[in-house]
Length: 523
Image 1 (cartoon, rainbow, N blue to C red):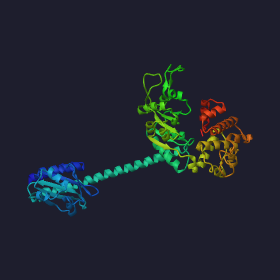
Image 2 (cartoon, one colour):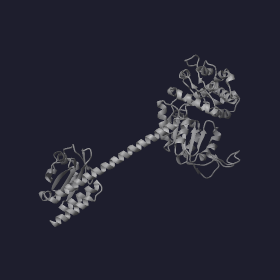
Image 3 (cartoon, rainbow, N blue to C red):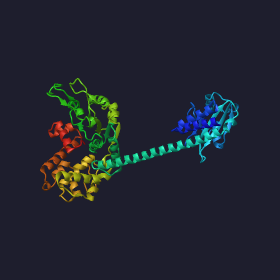
Image 4 (cartoon, helix red, strand yellow):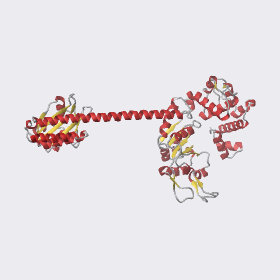
């Protein structure tokens, strides 16, 4: 009796020391086998769904479907009563998992199956006792055995409750983290809405995508029509990222001649080529620690595309004429208005570079598909004009907004900005922009109707007909007129800058500079 008490205390201490359910079940089965001379003891754990029994110590298959009555465990859970199974009976049970358990137990002559339930009737699992002696009453009737089962059941429930509490804490933490993340995204979207203006659904989605893109280090490819605000998207990604304190280096691949673009990007050493009288740091090096924005990436020469691809693989590059490679820790954002998929098919753009650039693809919806943004964009441009000039219109009338909504804006938000700024110039300070001022640009052949671009007079001619008495800033007026002349000439030549530059008596590079300065689109 004293020996039994001492053994019981040792077993109880061993069980109560376990801090996880797997350790508890492993200790319990080992102690039961040693104490009662069993050839093997198994613990099958019922999962939370109550549909599957798991036997962690058994190799494949170690799971038993509780709805499959070809093994005895399903019957046992249904009845809730312990039972004995002899080896002769086990041969009639062809369930592969049960046969694997028999084999792993050294083919005992007899098994005792003991279901375990909590005080609330909740099924916990099944104990499987294996030995050759069929007299189970000598074990199951012992107070030590019954006491150990009671203690095991109590500890089992405690471990489940502890695991549930851990799971609930993790779930709560995950929920709080999600709320925190959602609040962070919301606040950053509010900040972004000050520059990436618009209340339409496409703009709301775009701002959320920009915030997510800013939180990663993936390369971003911004695609959209000319003038839709791809540069604003790129600036937003930079300013909301953890590189905001670093530089944002902008490279317009269309504005830099092909012969100079490689030198601009990679830099060069002194004497690397004719005219290189001193070393020059490239834009890749200047962007280290910040963001490199390659605008109009679709215009990059094919030969340079392969070199850029190698740089993107490891951020290593070699300046022209240099022997040693340099490293630059930059984050890449690229943009284009060209359909790159078509350029790939035509062999003008590398497919592998496209996939490397578009790790996080973004698309900016054209203005004609989000006319709900007209009012907030117009008021944004009016505020911008007033901050720059010191005075300007109070706002824009509903009739003017109605007139604008009848136009499809091939130049997108940039064209709207030019229209609003020119209208601001013609509107007395403190007044609202009226549709009559908008018609100075001959956008409309009649109130409420769209103009036919093939039959209307040019923007430059319309501007020349404006009332010059309202001009207060001659420089700004001259720049606006120059921009309209360039825009009109580009339309005349279908966006061909070479022909437009020749017709104006300008070098192509000068025209490209003016287009960049005045934000004039090609078409």
